[in-house]
Image 1 (cartoon, each protein chain N blue to C red):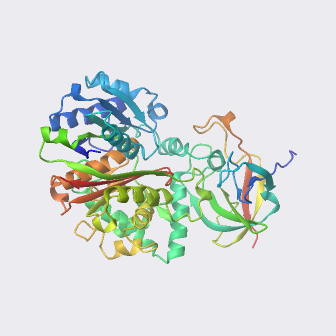
Image 2 (cartoon, rainbow over the protein chains, first blue to last red):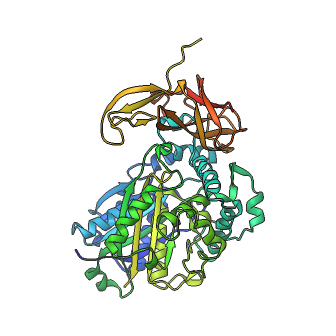
Length: 383
Length: 124
């Protein structure tokens, strides 16, 4: 099987945008084609990662709309919905399309338009992924985070402030990301005194509601060389699913989908956690950065919080995590997030991350849907 | 006064129990019987109070994950708690509520599911 290369990447400004989902997707898609010198007619496949454009905006059929808007006809199109991990699932689908030989040039565009809805409405659209016995209790994704954070802090004797330091770190990283929704530092005192949202978690433990889009171009490595000398290869990728009903998991502080998907990705790449130089994790809530960093094997179970205390995951630390600012600072337009994670790793591995640049040859992206319900882990290497 | 329905969990061929019931259990077998969890007490695994609730949900909303011990077999459930004065490890009992959340206020089609169920009340 020939290696799959990523030869281009683009993303829109994340934040509160006037553009609607169709326009956001076209903005990122057009920029990605332009950046990489690939013509739209070269696309064999075009995938759109999106969770809920029908529910948010009443716009369905967006892959077809995007193909028309970009003059990419007659490329095969499909929408990839895997809730918050739609982007990662899109990376998996795009990788499959190339690895299988079905396509020689695939573009993936992830996007979501959310900010025209109130926080309560947007929260409910996202919570609609839950099982009926969960939904009728009024559970939300933030409340799952509160439940898990309390158990984690209690089980591992971690200080509440360690979660706040995740927010501080990722906001600091976001200052240097021109596409981030928040390009502003916050101090620990501000985080710890912000309003309680889902006890013990406070406002700054949560990512914002965001509009935005991101895009990637994938092709076989032999084709990549026709376009550029600077690309990254997907060395390993894994997808896995955990229980739909969150409370049925034996240990709520372990994300089984992260464990399983990363094992597949590490094996495919013939790598282990020590080989990873930089990572983008799904910090929709600060607690998720601890859980994923442990379940990916970066740190022992229950020790993820010590890594932030020791500065290990800082931009200048041994293992920089969320150099983009993460979902926490960059924003979380559901279907775009997993694509934007890979965008950041692509920038890091091609040496184009500007002031966010770290010394990295291998990067990992972990995109989580639901509350760990669906996960894609992707390992990439500079060519 | 309406009759109180059971807090029904499914028992599978291998003896495992889940709430809610699934067409197939953890080992792939079909349910062979049910158990009414309202006849048991449970232990709080973790809890939260949510202050940013969706349309039709009480605010604040106290929620817990609890574990029942059904003759030695653990089974977990998530539900509202009657009070925010709750702790990990506390014992709770199920208390029936005719409407946990206002049907139709949120995005979910009202006819697609039930809206009554059980809250948990700390007893120790």
